Amino acid sequence: MLRFCLRVIGFVSWVGAGALIVIDGTRSIAAQEIETVSLSTLLGTKIAFIAAHMQDDHPFLWSALSGFLGHLPSSLFFVALGAMALWLGRRPANEFGFDDMA
Image 1: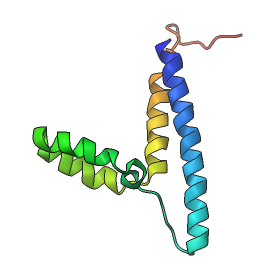
Image 2 (image 1 turned 30 degrees about the vertical axis):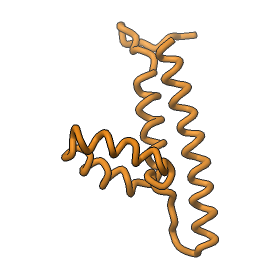
Image 3 (image 1 turned 90 degrees about the vertical axis):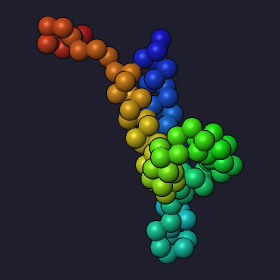
């Protein structure tokens, strides 16, 4: 059941990433320069809630994450999230090293 949930999360995040790529492409064509939706723009006010709690407990970790993840294109984040979820939800390898014939 956990593998199924991870696969669903992976595919849904890939679909979301595809939609964000289309949005980024449309905005870039209209502006005639590359424009992407950053993760901090996508999350909006939720980032302030996370920042309030993380700055008190882990200020060094928050400064590193906010600098890197804040400017990361959201489509790239969702592609990576989907790939990680699909990798975690994959079927286990056959113990004899042969694929199923069916």
